[in-house]
Length: 294
Image 1 (cartoon, one colour):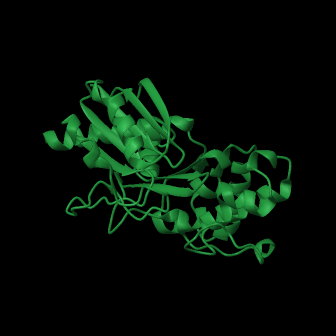
Image 2 (tube, one colour; image 1 turned 180 degrees about the vertical axis):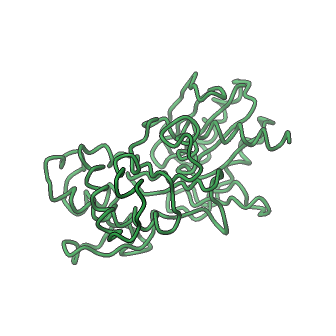
Image 3 (cartoon, rainbow, N blue to C red; image 1 turned 90 degrees about the vertical axis):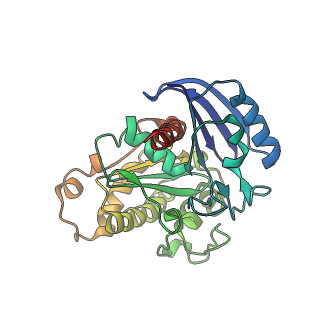
């Protein structure tokens, strides 16, 4: 089986060819520019690859309701030039099944298929980077509803250090992304996250926000494992701080050994590193093909 995968990010697009085992055979990366030009270049890449299916994991918000005439669209994104873009429609010329979901759901699916989430039926994958997003896999399926989860915009308590901090989200002044994303760290401290590795106070504050978010996810979704990826999570020691702060935020309410005694196995880093999204995208294509054949 020859699968195409497309991971659509705000700064770059990753195109790949792979197989049903999650093996990436070819990869092509381009900068995310204006929508028409970018999608045209991606279409050219896939046009002669003879793929059996294509899977797309996209930044959002996106429309996932198959009954909507806007299914397959990027909708109200603040990304300039990308609002109301028909992504799936752009690739119909390939005449193959096309799977479509959020970038974080794709990454979650990748980790569930061949990574740190393998063997679990309830997994949350979070990416902490330029933005914050969460993919949710419950009872063996990616979670959709009226919309896709926007867990990165959950409201969190403003820490005392941030009483005068305006945050970075244009929609909410006290959501997780506003306080804990890479741009929020840079705005607050005046330097890039990778330039602040030795500043203990930076990561203690970051971990408090992420720990509160993890506690919220545990209460709402009851995951068997939480996987945290993205550029910010590359900071040495941050995952350990997040585990500690998650326990504090839970306040002893949840008494499960997986959390109270095995937290280092409960909140983990990705096994697939930066390949989670593209492998998950290919899996989306495979699942769409299987659905059409059934």
